[in-house]
Length: 163
Image (cartoon, rainbow, N blue to C red):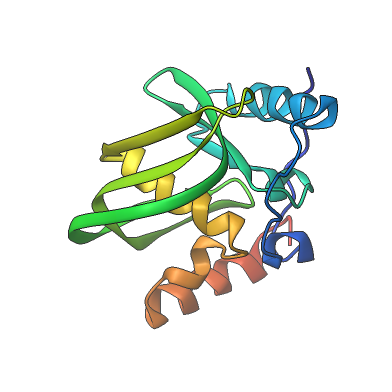
């Protein structure tokens, strides 16, 4: 297993919709292992494959110490009150903004054996499901911010030492 380097905004791979995984082969198994290893670190709630430079539809998560993954996830529903929640992204390091996220979310996908998996939850789990499925559609959290929040966040990005 390998902790993979996180691609940073505005890397083009972050803007491309991820391809569905058709065959679960050794390459996909290795990718999932790398995602799990990359996510299993303090302060990381999730990592989508495009964030490590791979344009495939899979993400890993680390919520309340539970580390897992979801292949070909579809955000089935997000509901409840939409709130502006402090959010950051490993691909936009050090930049936090108020992102609109629903209180509850449910995603459906498969595991490495092809069995159906449903992930759902509230709070951080709901936020992660919305954030990571956005990544798989080529959406970075900066895109979902209000006009004013986005303007301020992009100014911080331009002034960052990594941009």
